[in-house]
Each structure stands twice: as C-alpha cells, then as structure tokens.
Length: 285
Picture 1 (tube, helix red, strand yellow):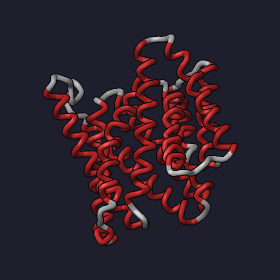
Picture 2 (cartoon, one colour; picture 1 turned 135 degrees about the horizontal axis):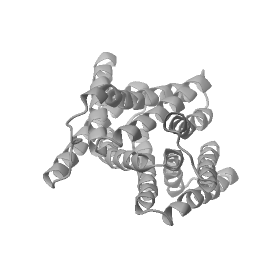
Picture 3 (spheres, one colour; picture 1 turned 30 degrees about the vertical axis):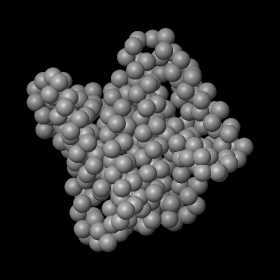
Picture 4 (tube, helix red, strand yellow; picture 1 turned 180 degrees about the vertical axis):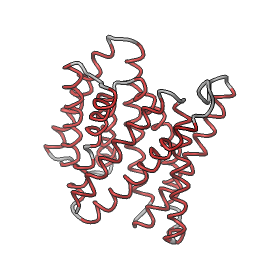
C-alpha cells in the first residue's frame, strides 16, 4: 500500500506540473498560481471543517504562513520555466529541491551517508549537462534553467517549513490550508502589483473560462498529492515513500513527450536523467 500511494503521489504531482506549465503557455504564470491555489484553498477549507482540524491550531502554523509566502515565488518560477520549456529538462531539475532539507539537516548536525554525498555529485552533474546547452543557446532557454533552480530552492524550503508546521495528519490539513490561503493572498497581491505596472493579468481574449477545469485540476492534483504522500509515509517506511514519490518528473516528461511531442537533445536528456537519479539517491541515503 505504501508503494501504491507513493506512486499515486508521483502521478498527481507530475500531471499537476504538466498542467500548470501548459496553462502558463496561454495565461500569465501568476494568474495560473492564484487561480489554481484558490481552488485548492477552497477544497482544503472544506476538509479542515469536516475533520475538525481547527483544533490543531497553534504557534507552529507560522511555519505554514512562511511556506505560503515562499510557495508563490516557487510556483511562479516553476510554471514560467515549464512554459519556456523544455518540460523534460525543467521538471527533473525542479526535483532538486530535496537538497534543501538535506542542507538543513547538515546545519542541525546530521551527517549524510556516502550514498547522499554521491547523490549530490550526480545531481550537480545533471544540472551542468542539462543547463550547459541552454547557456549557449537563446536567452529564453537560459532563463528557464535559472527559474527552475530558483523554484527547486523554494520547493525545498516549503517542504522543510510544512514539516515543522504540523505533527499529525489533521494538523497537516490545517497547515496546507493556511499555506494555500497565504499563497492566494501573496500571489494575488503580486498579480495586482504586476497589473498596476502594466503587465497583462489575463490573455488578450479575457479569462479562459473554458480552461477553468484545468486550473481546478492543477490545484486539486497538488492537494491530493500531498494527501497521498502523507498516507504513504504513515503506512510504511518514509524512505520508500520518498523515493517513489520523487519519480514525478518522469510523469511530466512522458506527458510532454506524449501530448506535445517534445524532443530533447542527447546531452539534455542525459542531464535530466542524472538530476533525477541524484534526487533518488539523496532521498534513499
């Protein structure tokens, strides 16, 4: 059952990444973040009320607020990078956010094993190979790599903060709800400021109402992935859950190949693969 729920997490996160990147190719990234996270916040609000999670409220929720402030920056950067492409490179590089919890552990006195040290080396090699051709290419491609690394840093920070924000399953629901509400407030403020400066907040033909189900899917898939991962981690070894859940970039890459006929250069594919392998090594170590 642990493997089943963890693989479901990979599927949901991978499809959410693909959907978010695809939406951002037609709609400004900040708008995608705000709308999808607003749907997620509404659903989580219902879950919080239904489970009585309000009883878990306490000072630890400030970590969730901090995660909510970092989250929109990470999501905006990631969706923007996915829109600039290629998804098969961006998604695996984004998974390097797992290095952030590792760094926090080092600061707190933990020492990684040989496998984790090897994972760091493999992941860095993947960044160089996947990003190297981009740095010699068009400016848009260079921007995609830099945005992805910024997103990875943000995602890793959010993982650490959310872990500190709750100590139970119902507490996790409340922490995720607070995070999503903060996401919407922070992202909405940034969107308002961007529009005030003259940037477009919507496509030229107005809000894409036909795409509203897609916005909802992205937000709900992200929430569901958090839920399935929590179940997987409680049912069995966290290591197994983390490894299998970290395979979500494969889903994004396969979706991009299947639906967009996306093709990668050999060196880019090798770099993306190494980044994913390094992530798995970090998680297993």
